[in-house]
Image (cartoon, rainbow, N blue to C red; front, side):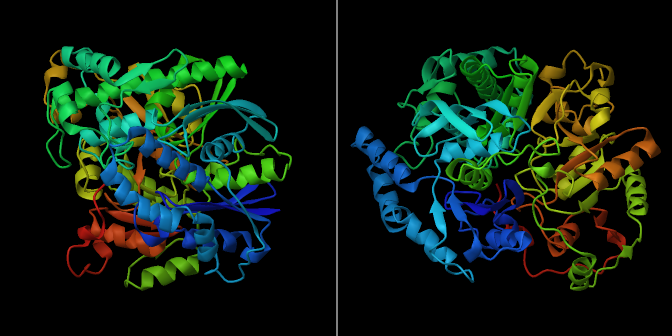
Length: 619
């Protein structure tokens, strides 16, 4: 039985295909169109999934869309009615789109699918609810036979968070938090106020939070204001947001700027304004409040289910700081977070929900440690594909017959301080680069974070980088007692690896704190001595694992800096052509694609028409 899952029309459109319960392929549309967070119908992703599965679209058993559009429309109408007469401008703006496109979404989906050869409306079209798709993507992909399930995001149809229980092939939703009260929208409101883009800048807010001074009077005051004025947190983790301060329910912005400016004592930050300590302190405050809410929701999930396991999905599940706190709390023995927790992962969950719930198919436990196969579910390219792609640019390359030679050479180049673009095997599904579409550097190099941010990624200097470490060596560097293959857990760097900070450290300017040598792996040690760890497992990524082995043999260190293979505003690269373009547009030193090694110094001069940076909208 083969089922296609689709998420589309809001942000991060994607497609996934499930065959006899196994995820065969999954990809986001943005990787093909090169438009970050592309919301359009994922025709390219669908074509890839069908080709990889060897299936004609007319032969599918079902197609599942990741939410129920009519329920979402009901929520929209009831919200406008409930808040009337506020929200008239938003109502006038959004209603024609809903009436034209989204009420008749089933027809729109059929029409889009008819552009694909072989499609027939005889194929069953299913619509699981949004949070059920999230829950299914987490539980059915997990290694657990039974588990509590916690989903937290902005909003689906009505639900903004839900607690469920999964056992064998069934999922039961036990409790829901409903719109307009939402942890995801609360976090996005602070994302907006601090000058980052909603639905893409939340991870920047999370990265900014550690620069906050935790015990300062201002930070303490911000936490108190949030709890006194904006949010009421119940013991079960449910929340009530004071809608006098929020404008997302019926307006065209997240918050009432003037009210927030009066509340916190400073103006809303614009996107490229210089960051001040007050911005950092407010980021810390909302992260602290979010941690508390997630822990309380998890505690309620434990109370309702009694399980020792928890599976998580939804956009807020990408908050790896909160995930790290949950793991260390010991509320659950085992924590699994869906690596594509956002809307893209809804495509996987929709297909899984259709297979296990609608068709009542039994669940088979994966032979690997989970059903996501390391999240390496996208396209891969043969030697011929690579050579044809490189020849378009007249690229100069060395081809090696043995990959261990490539790994050894790459390890040596990284040890010499070079930055390497690294493209291997199948592209990752989800927002994280996990070692197949990555830019790599030496974690021991004190200049590496600055070089990667300013000369390679062309992004804000405060942004942290993640370490990749051999799974069996993780405890040597980090206080982490679990695997973290998907870079979704933050853990402290070992005390023994840290550098003593000066007494005036907290009062230093932000950038001075950033570039202070904090440990013997400074490029991946955040200002609060934390790190977003990725453990590398030989079973799921033997090539990346071998590179780490070669680097360790050469240097004694098995940690590399790993960041996504792209520049700011660009989706991670997909094809060899994408990789070469990104390589030549930046100050990367070397590029490795499969067994092909390219040195920047050997390449022909790179010429482009106009300013290529305008090709991508800054996020």
